Image (cartoon, rainbow, N blue to C red; front, side, top):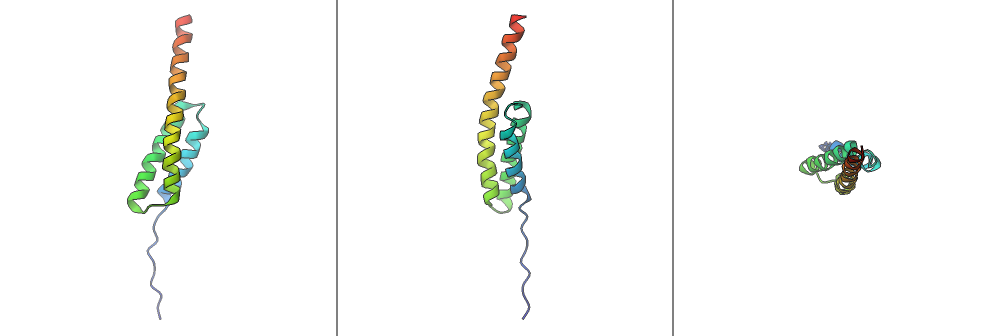
Length: 89
């Protein structure tokens, strides 16, 4: 009796979403970098969902959205602080 080979499904996009969302959250003090990583995490999670839904992709999407919010707020603070410094000079 021969065993049928199961088609291997790639989980690379889900893992990429999870890793970049974690990095995006950790780099909230550098919002210029963190926001791009978080956006990439959401896009990578969407790509993984087209292939197969995984828990890594779901976690990456959720943390990516949280990272976009946190990094967006930090980016607004950085721009406002920079404006206050330039106005004082």
